[in-house]
Image (cartoon, rainbow, N blue to C red):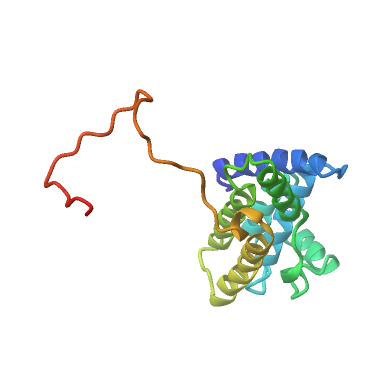
Length: 195
């Protein structure tokens, strides 16, 4: 059974990708793109232990909101070459557009939170959930999870202007008073003064 909060997050990511696609001039159904790419990642993980279980197929089907069997998942994996080193290097369109939109926000000085990091957290959570569905996470499953997640993290770190500039937040200055904000009351031993 899919975590309902995670399913809501998948739908929210779909809406975000839909908006991001339109911002960068791509006419596509962002919800469908986000769900299919997440499902491909989950299919990749489901093949990691050499077998596709019913509960893994059901997990994937719930995210796609359509029925799927192990046979269907296996067929898609083979047709789309999902369980491959080639797939491990393919950056999902979802991540490409959210990084591009994050960079547009950075360029306009309106960046506050990284959408790509939120998408990455979602992939991690959905992947962890899928790995746990059969009750046994083997070394190969963990290795494949790490390979794919590391590829996404590297893409974000290499292409996100916010991360490249090493800035968290800049332009902060010490409050000089007079703005109606009192300094917090401190208790304890006084600190030494500057000389």
